Image (cartoon, rainbow, N blue to C red; front, side):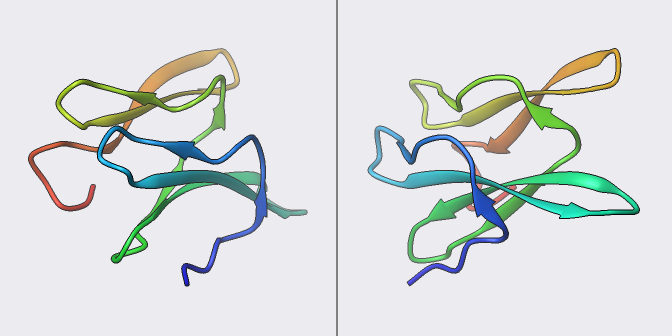
Length: 88
């Protein structure tokens, strides 16, 4: 069992290697919303995003996982997991 940080947003997504990813969010009245991506696997790693996801996760042919996020007037690409590393 993998414990998710916060409330789920969007659908559960599966990478080509079978790892499932769920985006969640938490809210704090001081800092606002914080978004997280959890890899639902034997390690259950969670990556905290700086900003709000602007679309679904993207899976590269090599197994890397990416998300685009925005905060204010900026949008950038975040690496959730690189294919050549266990976690990011």
